[in-house]
Length: 327
Image (cartoon, rainbow, N blue to C red; front, side, top):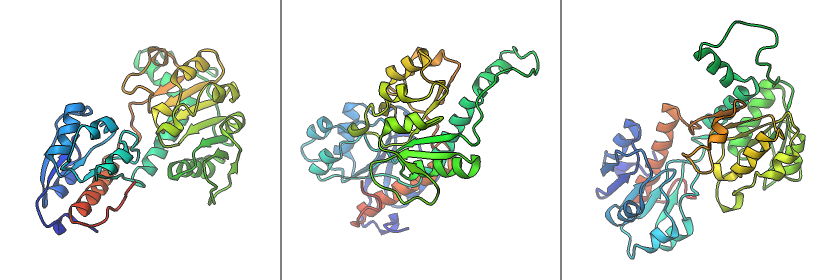
């Protein structure tokens, strides 16, 4: 592996902010002193500040809010790198980090296929009312098959709309086009040369209006906060279903709730939430909404791949080399 831990000239102190698969920790421990937090929750302000002063590098993840204020509280940070575990890094103020001489990396590519699989899980579960059906069976309320029971929406041959046609958006589109013969329309920030049929449209509302299923697949951050809101839901056909596997703050959650309650859209499948881990009672009460606990990349293989990629970035920087995946 380029920049492997064996190349590091000195043992460094590394903080891993959440429990990670054993192979990841073992890779880091080949040449460094590793501290792994037992907590599964994000670090608080004091922990964040201490991580920058007490460690040579940190392997943080979603929710570890390295804000400009946190960096400003540290005059001369010891840390040289935040090797983020995950492709999204909107919880890190990258400009403030670099102003303090701290590099930031992420794990692009490792999450693509698993996140696309989760998008299809949400799409199919919501369209075919699988969550409702499972709850019915578990509650002992299923009285047997009949022709009009839990009639959902057909998926094959319908139109898929994607907001954001990056790696994950393309992986979703390919699954839907090749697997379900779906027409694909999309809106993205930059032109794409795609290896499958897909029609670009001028804006989010135009994609929403043309879609039977609308998927948000954009990165988080200030530029995309509330990108999907009342105008988007108002443009969608009443039978359409919305799926979010991007970041919770991309969607105006109150507008989504209003659209579902008002019958503007038929349902939603969500893996992320605006104020995660808080999920509004209004969403939890709706049978036409599929709710997952941020399972996008939750397979052992993928989490190992993500962790080893973060470790590669970390070991490269500590060895005096360029990071493999700078943001």
